[in-house]
Length: 83
Ligand SMILES: [Zn+2]
Image (cartoon, rainbow, N blue to C red; front, side, top):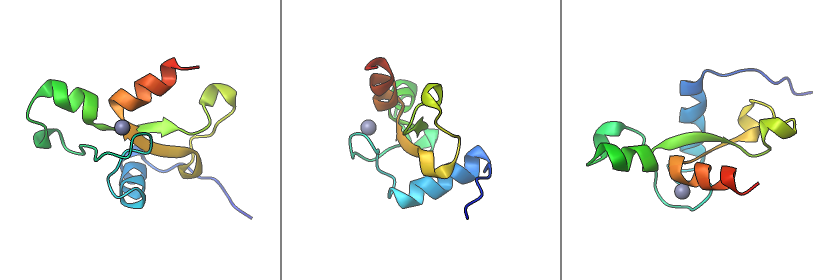
């Protein structure tokens, strides 16, 4: 019996960050968690950790920790364009 519950985005990100050791689920490279770690705003915009739905919401994917992973903003965008 599992009950899905909504975690706050901050708590979700923290849980996933630890589960993935701070690495992108799509390319396996380290992600930036804090914008102060980025040398430039542009680097931050591409390399920050974003929440990615494993099963897209458009296909019935839920907003639960089981269906979410962290990926670079850049990788997330590439994946999103490949449908
Ligand atoms: Zn990536």
